[in-house]
Image (cartoon, rainbow, N blue to C red):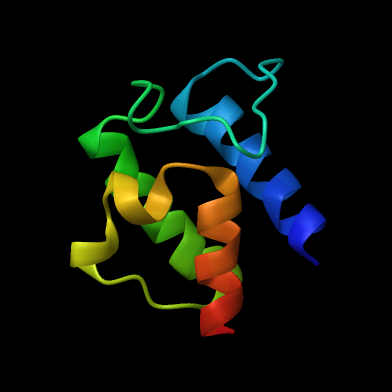
Length: 81
């Protein structure tokens, strides 16, 4: 499930946030601290996660400590399901 989850997140980030559908994003690549995702896009990603995976993300969790890699994000989603 985690691999499918990461693939879904990668596709959304590459297509909708980075606007680079062919961009490859590693599961451990820094998303926020590298600048790939900015604060506005972070909110979009949080909403996408909530809608797609049926979990609740608190506003205080929208930060680099929780969302900086796809692995971290997948672990958070799994812990909520």
